[in-house]
Image 1 (spheres, rainbow, N blue to C red):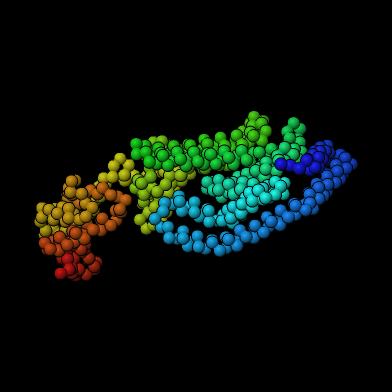
Image 2: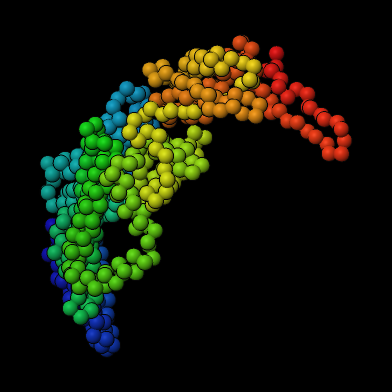
Amino acid sequence: MANHTTEPVIDSVADALTSTAEAAARGDGATLVDSATDLFNSLVLAGEAMFMSLLRPWVGYQALIALALFVLAYILRSTLGPRIRAWMGTREGWPKWRMRVLVVVHQRLLQIFFVILIWTVVLVMREITWPSRSYILSLIGTLSLAWLLVAFATRLIRSVLLRRLVRIGALAYVTLYILGIVEQAARILDAAAISMGDFRLSLLMIVQGFVVIGILLTLARYVTTTTSARVAKNEDISPSMRVLITKVVQIVFYTMAFFIGVRSLGIDLTGLAVLSGAIGVGLGFGLQKVVSNLVSGVIILLDKSIKPGDVISLGDTFGWIQTLGARYASVVTRDGKEYLIPNEDLITGQVVNWSHSDQFVRLDIYFGTAYDDDPHLVRKLAVAAASKVDRVLTTRAPVCHIVGFGDSSVDYILRFWICDPSAGLTNIRGNVYLALWDAFKENDISIPFPQREVKILGQDHTFEPSGTAGKLPG
């Protein structure tokens, strides 16, 4: 409860602050000086009233008792803290949430010990002496307990900045509420204001706005996180629609939190319509690419042409989609590089989606053999060699065809299917080529070198390079 002797002093501070703000708004220099002087005198009187209250005998005794209890709590924390930490290290099989609670408790051991000690002393003093002689201790104990509960409650907020803002606001409010000076503090904050025409902005409005925005952003974060987790577990929704639903929920709730918080400050948003329209036009011209990427990202999510996990090729980039963002898509290649491709390029450019409709991919490799080799045997050996390679599907059997008679070889094409393009394409092609090499070497099939005939003009000699149709090395 607030001391009745301090309430007039607080009221005088609020009146002086109000007159000072009004004089500053009017630009009246003489009145501003007088008001500032009154404000200074009121602050001096408030300080004197607080100092005089501390000179009472039992007030000083209770302050010394509280200080001694704090020192004792510090000694207990220093003694028992390491032992509790060591005991926590042996709890390996406990759930994560329980370990997090223990970590938070360990971080607040000093406050916990102090609250326990001071309330123990308060209860004992109420039994052996007058309640008024433990009033300050009970007030300090109530404040300590309230601050401890605020610290535990704000740990639920993951954002560090938002957690600090909410914690500071909550600590200030519970302190004023326990001291019984909420109305006086609100009056002082409301007196410190700036007026511009019909618009008035005070410290009280700013504090209220921060509190409301912090609470709304916390609720918006909780709702979006919960919704995203539930949508991610729903197998009936496609991956692209999961991303789209999550983005829409985040935009809607965070926008609502911002506008409601701004409206709580008393700012009329309709008055900003013309200004926001002009700013929107300027941003539209300056951020064409950004807006184009945002719209392209929404289109990609809606038409499901590309979704997380798909294997794509865009120019020289080959990899699989890891995430789809509002502005870009993250593509991870086989060598571990992560490319951030703007969504606009995925819409306007030619993209090869190896797993758009299904995971089946057909690969082609070309080779040639000498004219002396039986083409029927070559085709059978090629199909058999490809069928023995891991990852090559046998349900869709490989095929081999003659595609032409070249200058020095009979040209073939070997086609085979795989169902895991995310595992790589170059490696499976290399394995099939090795299988062909082994099969041709075992059956004495030749892979010819290019044959060329060189004529030197002015001479009757014709040279034919040796080894133009050599066989595989033995």
